[in-house]
Image (cartoon, rainbow, N blue to C red; front, side, top):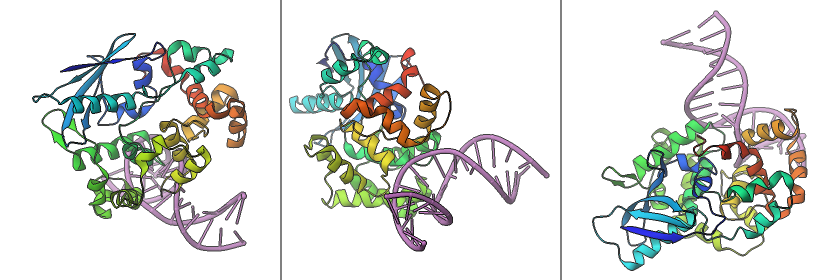
Length: 300
DNA sequence: GCGTCCAGGTCTACC
DNA sequence: GGTAGACCTGGACGC
């Protein structure tokens, strides 16, 4: 069953998919030979849909649901809502592109359709994954996320696994998370987060539509144990707020190479550098340090 | 093959 | 408010 999404002229599917490492973490899977993005989506009715996504023309994205049963009209709408959320078609980037055009060094951004950062259908998945990126190599992040999906998600024949919901993680022991999922000392953080959500104490899915000032939202995100300045800054970017840089060691190194001839500086210097870009500074920072990715269709 | 060291963010205790 | 040490894992390195 094929569904169509109409996309604006400034949208570029592969620039969005390869905007950061999320596309290589399950349930996302890039099928390079088919030029499609694949993942399972869990709908509110309990139905799990295997879908592939591709851009067929500048104005159309095709979402193909591989289902034996026909989806109801509401299920189709929900699937499309999830896809739009993931590829950021529910956000307006005109203001950002207008801003980028003002700077000679950033005119490549609107031209290439960069700027939309791929995200998960749920805030929960984004936050758990972000905690799994802290204080470890990317290879270890991949191990943790793969274990979460394979050992706690739902399996659909050969299509793969879903990302576990908060109840699935909340029901684990700390020992299981440490030893089987291999999240190490992050285990109590993931447990606390999942249990607070399951009990209804923490409503993180509302963060995407929250209208509170970004500073307050940042503090709320920081209140999750295991989420420090780096993780909170990057979670905010996935919530559509770009006021924080979310600096990590890799970005720091890239910045030094691009702007300081490899010479090290403090984070304060990096923050000062991006201050003139106001509420978009986090996005300009990220696009600056990943600019070289946009030279290839599949940069990694 | 084994042991040691280091990198990678965040938390807690302490000053 | 700033800082040191602990947390845990994988990889690099020396023996």
